[in-house]
Length: 322
Image 1 (tube, rainbow, N blue to C red):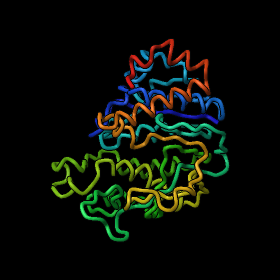
Image 2: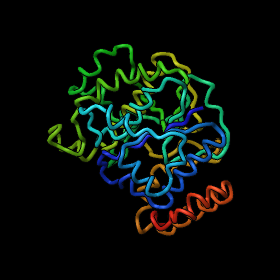
Image 3: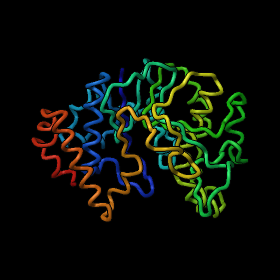
């Protein structure tokens, strides 16, 4: 099954590093993502812009992918998308263009064993629950899942879709298999209605006029809303069949997994997720080094020839520091 990586460097996300400035643990995870996918699933394709291509070419990593497309995003991405707030829209756009079933996976994720992604219309990482309007919210909580569809300033954007019911469920799409391509057509119709021309930025009071929003709404909330909550809304409202890979639910209220972690069923997925920003800090140097050396050992053991090709011969660790 075709695997897809999508990378767009033309975004400025607060509190995150540039995606084309990787440390060793990040580049190693990306390498393993490609190699394991090709071992267990099939071909993998990269959609990226020219700056990212130039970056991986300098690292000597372009042959990791079976195909690299540098034109789709650069020439097709709409000018009226604010990619600073809707930073993963490029991935959704690429997914909407596919003409055969596919799996979109983040470049900071790899899966080290086989898994059948063909069983349902949609297969995704895990379910997350909204932290807006359910239960008691902790003091000083920053909302990740506002009910944007109920905000007065956005209501007109949702009026054309009376059959789509936005619920409290979100689908995490760190890995996303789409076997019924109609899902992407239905999803992008409502996503584009909300996203295109939308200049709202929780961290910029000039875009909404409410200072409190700056301290209570997470800057990533717009993206999680369109990528996760609207996807869940479309899939459930339209009656598509879905399956989540991980069995536990992640709580938006508590920002933690619900239930006994010892019962987590994880079919070999490693996802850097929030570690990326954390492990770049000097205070987490020991954890970062431990992770990096573990990934180096895994690459050497699982893919010895590729370890030589991509790590040793390329002097990768001189370019991506541990």
